[in-house]
Length: 247
Image 1 (cartoon, rainbow, N blue to C red):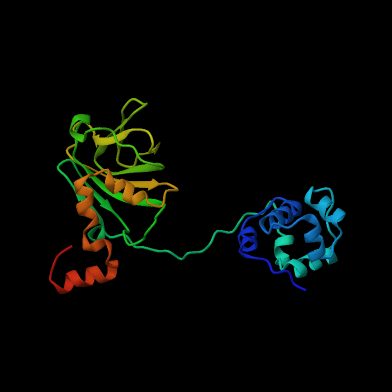
Image 2: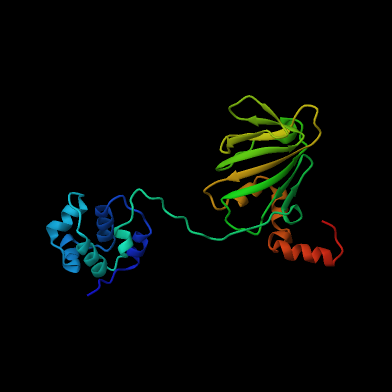
């Protein structure tokens, strides 16, 4: 007789456990079984199961096969290498970034181009930024948001202003990695009228892009309303070509 194990077991199987004992204990607790009930389902003595759960005993191969069959557990889970890496799910997500398809935020002091906008719930947001603000006064209050970010200078030079460090100047080919929870801002370096940088903002917050856009106030709201965000890149470029519009 095969045990009728519910969705709790399916959830449990997705979690890697360091020992066979921790796996069986988690399985039993999720299904609200006593040791005696699990013993009856698996046809393995209570004393044996108790020792396995407390990592004082392991099971022979035939007992593992029996456990797999009686409790409907994939045998591979029972032999999983506890030190092995957990393979990430392959989502096959892909997006080619074109500036003409970006979500744009244009102001007097900077232009932000949020690339690859058709991908939702991104944990990394690529942003091409053209900076014209020349001072902290022009930029305004330092900004903060969740996660971390990496800035690489493509053109000109910038001055990085942060809450806890002295300003640092960066030129083409130079970069900086910071904690985005720290107040920060980017302005042009001395003698530079405009600079272009590529930023990579990363966070476990799946609404990161929405959070970044909200920093721009009304400008961010207008950017989110642009049709380019909802239209696939190849289709939007084709439409512009048919209409005779330039990128």
